[in-house]
Amino acid sequence: MDPITIALGLAKLTGLDKKIGSWIGGDNGSKVASKVVDMAQTLTNGGSPQEAMNRIQQSSALQQELRQTILNREKELDDLAFKNTQSARNMQIQALNQDDKFSKRFIYYYAWFWSVATVIYIGCITFLTIPDTATRFADTILGFILGTVVASILNFFFGNSRDNSRRNEIQDIQQSLKEQ
Figure 1 (tube, rainbow, N blue to C red):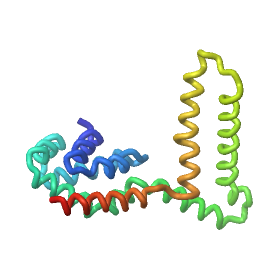
Figure 2 (cartoon, helix red, strand yellow):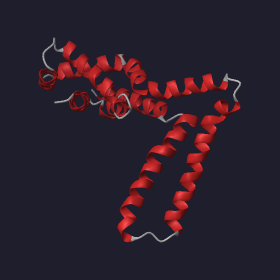
Figure 3 (cartoon, rainbow, N blue to C red):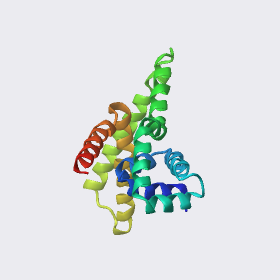
């Protein structure tokens, strides 16, 4: 099995499926998955990734220990998963320090272009007649625009809800520890 599949299996075993799933869902998902699998292999004293998963699957003590290891290294995994957003913001800081006005404003022009294109596209598919053969294409393009383009622009300028979800996950962990 590939590292992502094994990491998702380990996530389910430890009860951290939401957290690890959000890390793996990013651009650096394979690196995060490899790191989680490495942690499991270290914990189980080597062997193949599949062997490590099997050992952890058979032992609730190993599941709890892996969970604790992942939580202890949460900052490292979080940075690995989301460092692409930070590097984009650092690039923008560099651009703002230049004298060239176009370079300073490029990200705003880019966001403006995609925002206007999105509004025009949504207006067109809402108010114009779409042939039946093109409906699926229109839906796919709309999903891409809303799910990727608009979300990326909002994430870049306003951040994301990662901090809120982290707070909820911490509360869930604390609650599960109280119940044990």
